[in-house]
Image (cartoon, each protein chain N blue to C red):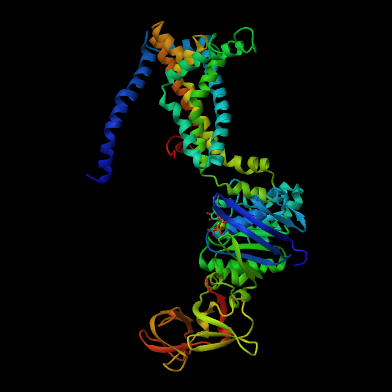
Length: 356
Length: 277
Ligand SMILES: Nc1ncnc2c1ncn2[C@@H]1O[C@H](COP(=O)(O)OP(=O)(O)OP(=O)(O)O)[C@@H](O)[C@H]1O
Ligand SMILES: [Mg+2]
């Protein structure tokens, strides 16, 4: 990537035997909305803190615009961070909180007041300047934390699960606002979350972490459509895994053999040819039909109705459980428990990945 | 009988104990001050006229104030270290703070005499090393009283500050630094203001306890540094002037109450004395 605003090289952070970061390398493009996604304990906060300068990596380096900042203290980095618990200063009013980074930077009073007003407007909290943080609701505190972080016009905004403490509805609203803010200001966002929906809906690019190492990175659609391993396939959305033999055909194409069926693959798979592999198939890409209509036979075990979709769990002799997601509107086959059915999928639905 | 009344009944023995052995004697003391040797306010006029009493009161408040300042300074550092850097050793460090409570104040005061005396450990060592020629006067003066008072009172300053600091999230300091403040500035502007309630609580506790403190000043002062409590005991034991002694006691009680009332405007007294974690 040309001229990344931040680049992390071979970052390792160990706590005793725990490798919180295990050889992480990543480049961050100026102005992008990058999300670090991973389950609890995967090292997201550790990576973000290393970038912000709150902890030092055991080995490896971090550069900002080409200059090494690995050992620079946080106050010299000019990144802004929004903490999970907001970390508003309880002894200062909302206006003082938002103006704090400006006061530290010795901005004259009048100019500072103007900028604080602007920032409060930006997060739609203009009427709250004289309140104390404890007089605000969680969502309001979140907005103030955001205004405070943006007040000094940082190049990079680091956000550690900023919405995780809020209820679902408010979270959805704020997601839109954050995204809009990002598009309007052009600031680089590095956003940490363990919520895959949040990651998918907001980001330009997602980095999936697990056990301190990067599993895969890419645009949301790319990660969803082409997961590289089982972890990514099952962490980002749901996947069915069926065992398959990958073979190269005489005409140069590749096929995946599943039981008696053969599926043609559109590109060369990144797995061992002729070795053991499996196919990841998204539940909504599995078709459900009357017995004999599709290529595999099964019996419906369980159905859960979710409104716009319903999830059907099917037992298959060889594959075990297969999860199928169907739209409920105009479903061709209304599923019933214990019904004998058949199921199958298109070649395009097959994503070959390595076993394990 | 309602549940509430039953719980009140359970508290009754303790209440009775307090009434009989504490409130009643205090009222008696007040009574004696107005009746001995003859009825009237004679003791109080004598007290206000006496220069010695005035000197002792000033001395008492000064020592209490200086003790408070030093306890807060030293205690703040200890409390901060335990909360910030204690980690797994924090309970051990807290235990060490509490350890002196297991040893009687009397023993601790004598220990200071052993250390600070004319040929005590400190003087002997310094003379052996040739740092000083003649022994320093480290006790039987205000210095000695202060040293030992600070030592005795330190835990009372540390505990409220520790309780307060425990509740302060470290993320505020990090946030301040992330926003551009240096470590020292973040401490001063963001962390320190949050610890003020703990500082006030600890300070008030030490100050009030110091005002009426007896054993340590009596032993380390050696009769030369007469804080008000020792002055009272002297009046009774040596001069048998019960009237003046009780008047002084009442005055000390009132003075302490005044301190608490004034402090009540700044400090949440309920938190200081009742809701200790
Ligand atoms: N100070 C520490 N001492 C020891 N181990 C730590 C410390 N901080 C983090 N770890 C370990 O490092 C790993 C990564 O932690 P990290 O906080 O980065 O996870 P996370 O991805 O942010 O998780 P979450 O979603 O729960 O916030 C975890 O296994 C954690 O136990
Ligand atoms: Mg975290």
